[in-house]
Image 1 (spheres, rainbow, N blue to C red):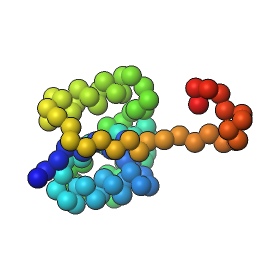
Image 2 (cartoon, rainbow, N blue to C red):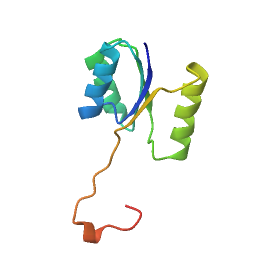
Image 3 (cartoon, one colour):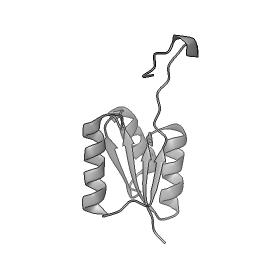
Image 4 (tube, rainbow, N blue to C red):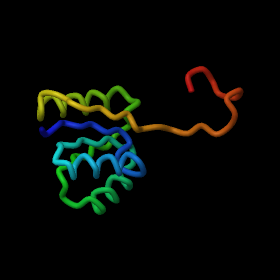
Length: 100
């Protein structure tokens, strides 16, 4: 059964591998990434696969709204959500602020 899959951070690394795996199994995949350059490279690597890439920072309200609206309007539902996007803070935990 075809699933609607949303993967954040899906333009490189583990996220891109997950995109490839779900697409190869016949699922509809939406991927969100901050980097236009990485999205272009991912599209070159994947070709015409059935993955829709959306550019934006998923930590921002406007991007979350854009993605939610896209999924709601195009599919009406979401079956699988993989929160793969992340950021890196360098330094020990003792130097991090509470919001980090």
